[in-house]
Length: 228
Ligand SMILES: Nc1nc2c(ncn2[C@@H]2O[C@H](COP(=O)(O)OP(=O)(O)OP(=O)(O)O)[C@@H](O)[C@H]2O)c(=O)[nH]1
Image (cartoon, rainbow, N blue to C red; front, side, top):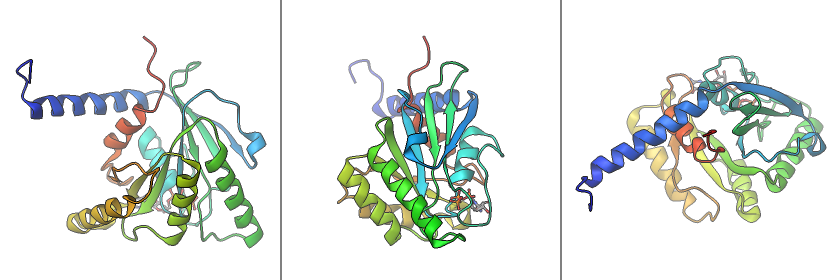
C-alpha cells in the first residue's frame, strides 16, 4: 500500500467503520408511520426505503425488532400470516429520518381465507415492482429450509423489474454452524444467475443477535447520510 498500511489492516478498519455506521443508524429512534392495504396508501417519500419480504413466519417482524433493538415495534407471532398490511417505519432523528423500513405481509401459506391471501400477494407484488424509493428488498429465507419456489417467483419478479435484492438467512440459531455455512454457500451459488441479486448472503438470528451488526451496516450504506 502507498501509505504503508497492510491490506488486511485496512480491510479490518473499513469493516469496523461500516459496522459503526450501522450501529449509529439503528441507535436512532424508529417510529411506526402507518400500515397500508393498497398502494394508494403509501406516502410519497423521497426517503430511501428497504423492504422485508419472505414467506409467512420466516421472521420478518422479528428481524425488524432485532435491528431496531425494540421487542415490540413490529408485531411477531406464531401464526403464519399475522402481518396483513405493509407496515412502514421511519428510522432516524425526529424530523430528519434517514431510512424507511417496510415490513411486508408474508408470501405463501397463511391461516387466512384464500381471497385475503391473494389480495396480500397482489399488493406485495405491485409494491415490489413499482415503488420508486425502494432501494433494496431483503428476501428473508429460513436457514433450515433454503430457497423455496415462492422465493424464486419473487426473485424472478425483482430481476424483471431490476429491483436490487439481498437474501438474508433467518433463524440460524436453529442449525449447527456447519449446516448454516452449507446453506449459505448453496444460496450464494443459486443467486449467480439472478441479475438483480446482491451477491452477499447474510446469516442472522433474531434470537441470538448473530448477523445483526452486519445487516445494520449493509442498510447504513443505503440510508441517507447523517446530518453533518
Ligand atoms: N429460534 C428463532 N425463532 C425465530 C427467529 N426469528 C423469528 N422467530 C420465531 O418465528 C416465528 C415467526 O416470526 P415473525 O417475526 O412473526 O415472522 P413473520 O415473517 O413476520 O411472520 P408473518 O407475519 O406471518 O409474515 C415467531 O414465533 C418468532 O419468535 C430466530 O431468529 N430464531
